[in-house]
Length: 640
Image 1 (spheres, one colour):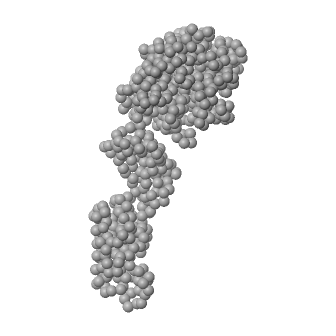
Image 2: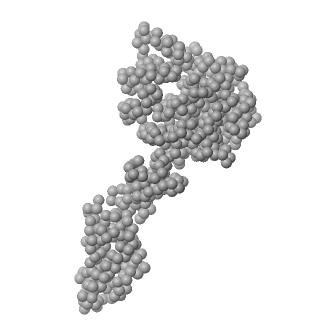
């Protein structure tokens, strides 16, 4: 069982039989007759050496016919001779290695090309590797639809209470498409039953009938229009570009049967439309030559379906050296399919959360249940009342009826291997501004670092890891305090709902220079006349000391208190010492460690700061200048 339908869609589009090739093996390869191409290339090898491209065609032919060991051997041989082999072929080489020698073998060869892959792909690889290691058996219920045929059935799409899909079943009136040996693709419609099964499938007659391909529909209930792809043709004659290629265009038909082309290029094929009415964006897959690999996912802005912009690539977080197809958006998450090397098989379905500014979280493999070692693609999803979620996807997994079958699924909760994703800004608690290049670390229940990253210039960060029940979040920067808090259970869930902004302080936010000493930054406070009682006003300032020592627990202090010159020297010395001791008691009672307070000193009137010494008349305001308390930081220069 092989996914010939996607081979048709993901390579070069329909090839004219009149296309001139220098090798019969090449002709068979580009006509998708891979078994015949293998035999022909083997014959040609006996007469003359194949080119690197022909060897890659041969490797692809083995790959497409499930002979992964042979394909891996040829890919590796070409790679040894030509390390500039494109990332698209390198991706298939890694896929073949994963299938024959295990996922561990992929890491070794990936090291040789790390600098050539976008950093997002490497992050996706590491992240999904960890997820797939931790996956368990799925509770998703999957059902092979009774409407499936012995031919290819795929690309399901909701049409109110019915289901649209693409089929190559032979009972269609269309002729056979030579490369696949099946009928030209047609769009079918069937009735959705309560259990998710689909019955009474028949040809969808709301679109203009052609004798060539019509496939991958998407119905917009807001526009009451159907988007779909079709062969480029002029009446009953296929249209070819200058290289003899017939690509697939995209059209739209409204409820009255009015048709118009939306995307049409004789050299570029378009696949799998999805229309997001809220933004007016039309998503699709296409094989533009400037993409990241095979087919990439793009979107264009529209006015009720009328194209208003150039195609915009979703970027390297989504698009890879492989093929990405079948975009579908549900509850602000993008579902799509990819055959990138770190999946479970050929095509796997992934889910990425959509962020602001058209950014995406790391795509998450949906794991066992939806994905298998075969090709799984084209997922759609919606609510199923109080029963959770339901939807459909296509697969050529073992046990099906044909090349590709459509499966329904039911899930009690959201799809995808569970992750913990949090984003926000590391802020300075004193200024409420973001702290550039702050370090964020996530630690497991044993204190082992799971993930480490740095915020950007504005202090913004975003991180996602495989879910764990207990996670400690740490935010820090040199000469700053450290945010360190452990979360679990419901608190972990709530953290992900809104921006999470851990706050830290710079050491300079809590200290200043006074009297040639580094002291904690406090508003000046006064004790009652002849008193050492901690008043509410004094407590308010001392609470700042508690916060500072919580943020910087290694600070070591000397508490020193000074009086004015009024009163005897001995009285003032005793009073100031009592005040320093009262401050210490308050701090200790409010959680400060005794290790933070090395000395308490009362200087009395020994260090008068103005001329208001004994016997000198001064106004009260001048005497008050001498009444002061300083919390001196003794280890300021060595704390970091």
